[in-house]
Image (cartoon, rainbow, N blue to C red; front, side, top):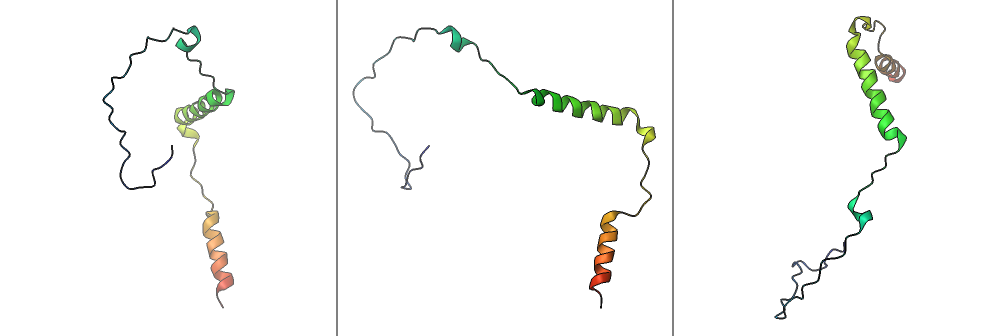
Length: 85
C-alpha cells in the first residue's frame, strides 16, 4: 500500500450520483472450501518438543546438579590472567 506524500489524509470526493447496486455474484463451489496445507515439520516439531518436555517432567529423579566449574567462568578467568601484566 503506497504511503501518501502529504501530511493530510486522503479523503475521496463525495459524489451526488447514486451508487448502482450489483446483483450478487454466482456461488463458486471451490471458493466455499478453504484448504490449509502444512509441511510435515510444522506438525512433527511441536509433537517432538511436547514429548521431550513431557519426558523431562515425568522423570525428574534422574536430574543431577552440575559439579564442574562453568565454562564461561573459566574463560573469563583465563582472559583476565592473560591481560594482567
